[in-house]
Image (cartoon, rainbow, N blue to C red; front, side, top):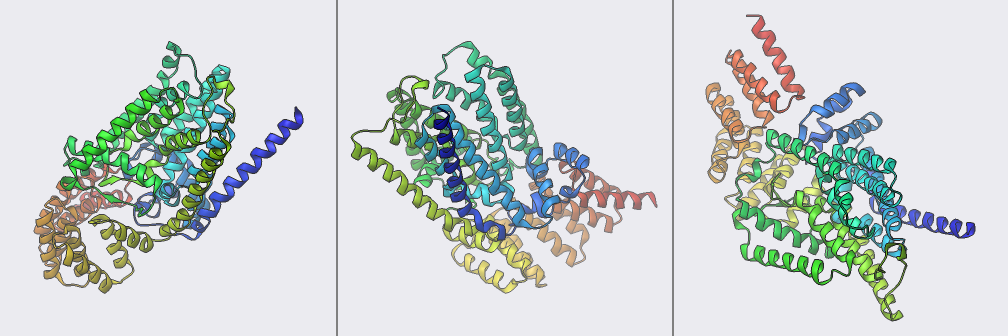
Length: 574
């Protein structure tokens, strides 16, 4: 018996080493990667709060609404990284990889512990580790919240399974603590209580009783509190404003398409991008209806027709329900969908594939064994297919991860595989401007305008470049063209204000700054510039009010804090 346990432990140790090595092979290059301008400046490079001491960092992390999210544990994690690595981006990247490897091993243990089925557990963990859709969550420093929250998600599930098997309250308390920590890392864990109910059904196969519901009530209460806090923070920050112009039916149509798109990208993970622009009114409604019908049909088929195959029901509902908080019904940001949103949901599909292709379940949980499909030829064929799929995903990931090396790599790749991606175009133009490659930036923008003369972001970007080159009149023309195609483009108003300042027309500049704030309430640059201009006009009282309004939205903004200090000092000197 002892020899058997020893052999089994060696078996699992070697499996874990192999999974960790394969994952590390994919992500090894990240130690040389840079921070990217897409959110990393908000989370790290321009976030001076990370350098604060322990007490100040904790206070700030729990009270800030920076980045339009409330995830204090993520902030504290990044703060620790800063104290360890300072401005070395590679250190931050490697910590993400470390958590991803831990998550892979925890996932392996979780499904083996629940089912005692070795090969399905290995497949689920391997697919999770190497799938190209997960690269965004790992190779992007700003997505620390993904890998960190998933770490606590899996620890919560493991503790809960221990509780369910042993009925010891200590394990229940541990599960609650891990769940709370996960919510502090990212609110997406709000769907975890439902997943706990799913695993009660399979593979735990717990008897349906009132206890199953009542023991989840504290989890649902924690999730509800987290949801309310997140909603208030995002609404106050203005993170939801980008989706306010979309009708509910349009969001629903996009959600149907997104569910199916994620499945296709799981199977055939090509043309991946950091941002897929929302199609808005150009969304294909017929395609959406077909996707919605397919989604409903598959759900009914799996849940009802195949109800004897419980792993299929649980896997499919895991996918559907864990995606629900980020599927776009409550729109946050301008994306149609995002690779990072699949980090947890795809586990459900991996469960369906792993258990469906490798073995079928026995009636009772304790009787789960590695029973393969027969005849033997079919078993080997299915195993070979899964191995080939994993190898293909591994090869794609080796290539895909390198696109995250720098702004230039990421932006050029995204612009190549997506259309009408004004946000990424703007990021790329800003990158070129930062590199003082102004002529190249103009050439890139004009090239786009030949094919999309109504691209408001292109006109706006061109106005920024022309301002840098001192061509004020041309810059003004392109600002007005940008506003013609998008009357709510805040940056265009900001650029017009800069034009007005160049012409010494400060009152006109004030008007434009106010317009910028009107259409984008959380536009901190506009608050700062407006307050400075009001001070230049000796309207210090108004400048103080502007600083205070900005600090209501972003209380930790040090530039606004310092500006307010100077204005109050100036006012006191009168």
